[in-house]
Image (spheres, rainbow, N blue to C red):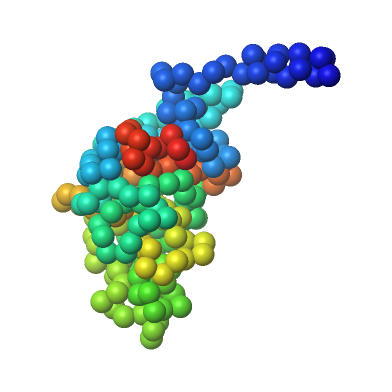
Length: 229
């Protein structure tokens, strides 16, 4: 028993404690298990601006690969499991990144699966549709156009984008649909995270599905603290 306690103590001592000046991913409870991570951090839950940073895990440490100013929902951020559709809030949490899409061709060396937007491309947000929170080519009969995004009409904002896996695998009606990391528009978003066009291109080139990238969205304060994820 004594030897087991000594071994456990030695193992604990071998793991360096997390400190406040450690890279942000090292202070998080979960990073998704991969070796790439995007953090989208706002100062507080009411903020509409903040910073997106993308990270690589190398040699057991998280290393910053790039960063850019970010925009969030017009009504700030809210915990993903409490979000309601139509509130213009960005869902805080840790999410996967199922695939990329864009009106423009993907940047060279893009490795994420990429869907090219056409005139028939829609994102259904109709709570009564079987296609809720899904890309569709041609609008289904049960998805009202007034409850869907005609992707090509978003112009520069959807030149390049990544789908954020919020409410995606098993959609909960009324929680929200169509949450993306995309190019900046004129101001705050309707719930997405946006960055300048060049940053979006750099992120698409950087992201490698084999390294299981995720995105963590949250705040520096305690209300929707990003380190909780």
